[in-house]
Length: 145
Image 1 (cartoon, rainbow, N blue to C red):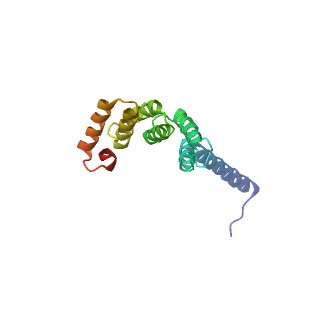
Image 2: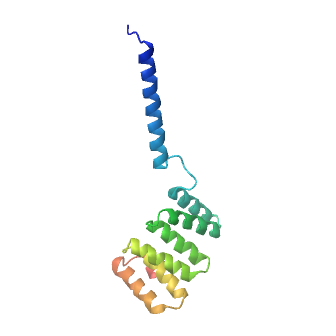
């Protein structure tokens, strides 16, 4: 049978408290608590807003997410798509161009940029993009559109 004295109990309690504090700090730093302003959470909320037709809210959430972490090609593509749906082809084109800077081979960004350019009557540049998409993915339904 092991007998613990008061010093051992205090030491074990302090060690346990230190471990709990370290775990809490790691969880918080990793953003595992579902913070409302975490970029992943903001992107998820933006997707929900877009699907529900709350496009202005989706734009706001995506912009907030991108302000915190600019290097998110998927979020930039989402922003371009929502701006396009809102009838803002210039803003959409800007978002798609930034997505292509982050991910140069993105077929989704190229196609979205092409559609945005068509809406601005920049037909030749749009055609060039659609041709690039078709060369990369000849059966792409979006490029064949």
